[in-house]
Length: 330
Ligand code: UT7
Image (cartoon, rainbow, N blue to C red; front, top):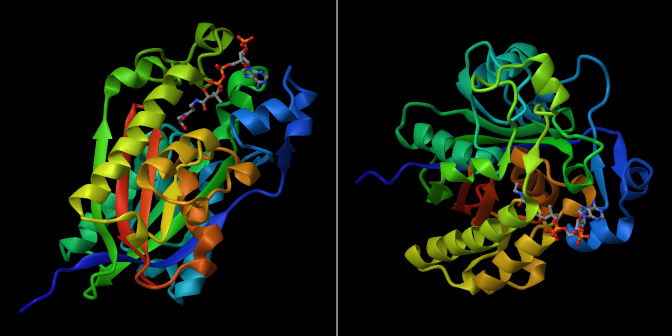
């Protein structure tokens, strides 16, 4: 009798740029203060990718190379590369293609996935299905965003939140029941009114006017997004636990999207988890959009044990949201 094929995470890599943008730095740029930022968001500093010619793919490259090195594989062994991002290097080609070129993943095909802060969960679930189908044996899923490219550093309501970074995982077939076991993914496009980047798409192609109107920056109605995020991230996480008969004590870690410490706390409370079981690094990196969840896994890797039950949860632009149950694979 054949066992069910699952997609296990067999290696992880991450990258954050050297340059730090602290709350003290932001106090000099906009009318804000360290106390407000820390208490309302939880962020203390973020990393910023600086330098001409540096883009999202340059965040992905070190993360994917680290993963290959840890697993002892050559990039040419990667079969498929999915990059979750809302800050692609260019409109086209896909950043996934550029990353493959830069690392020598000459046998891989790939594509980008746009689901904002839920991008990593969407991409992880998709990548896992390629493994589960038996079609591929080495799929790399990256969450990467150079948010500094689309942040208006004169807008205090958004510039204090976001940072740059990338995290990557390798998915391989598993027959021991490890890896991605269930996902609930959702979307509601009416949320576009509250969180978007208006300019540059086919609706508002780049023009002098779109630039003058600052339409190439993030627009967010923070309070509205906050209300949806708190409810939906908590609801979907509770639903995932319920349908898999997972009790609080069965869960080793909650790995939440790092948008706001208060949203994370609400989700953990709803799941009945104490704060020691919640990965939080928002204070060091801010909200790196698609990169927050894999960067948590990267930071906590040494504390994870094979077979640990992890619940990954996110909410973001779209709106998009979801939760994934994962058994740690190495
Ligand atoms: O990851 C993608 C999904 N995004 C999210 O999940 C983000 C969800 N939203 C949030 O995290 C929060 O809404 C924010 C952190 C963006 C804002 O926090 P808030 O507690 O909702 O603040 P608010 O917008 O209600 O503003 C409260 C006050 C306002 O002043 P008044 O009108 O009360 O005088 C703002 O102008 O805080 C003011 N404010 C600031 N003050 C100092 C807004 N930004 C700042 C700032 N520094 N940076």
